[in-house]
Image (cartoon, rainbow, N blue to C red; front, side):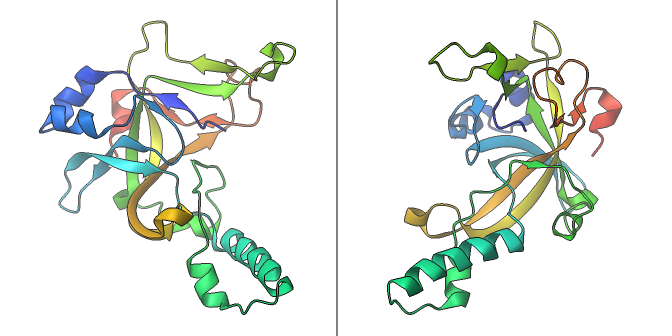
Length: 210
């Protein structure tokens, strides 16, 4: 499951952004981590493509949030505190899901239409590589790109605009444009490192017609 990628093609951003300097200044880094802001290309209601920053991490399924809220409620009740379950569920922090695999789940079906498709520009992505870990050291990442020059490619993404949730307790409720990307079976390059999945990559120009 890819939770780290880089977008290092500034020239591409310059071509897309109306005010490239301002847009680049909004990007916290060219290495994207979960819950950070990252660039996506989305469809507008009038059929145009728009380059925007969105927050990486799609809404978690209701049953996940409900279970977390119930666990929190049980701890509060054990301390003798009153519990408002509806409010507890509304304010349950949701860290978001970076990747989407099971598209048949009802949770994802509502966001599979054209209006929610997006392109996630990327030049390389990482997967943990435990086999390369040094004794006592951290698990290193294996990085993947199209070739050594790291040309631009895209993840096939889903975009959910104006979603209200609690991402961080200290920030409370916030309304965010969110995104994540689809995953598929790993190819012969990624599989030796990460056998479960890899991002869906769009490499040909015709593939990026969202």
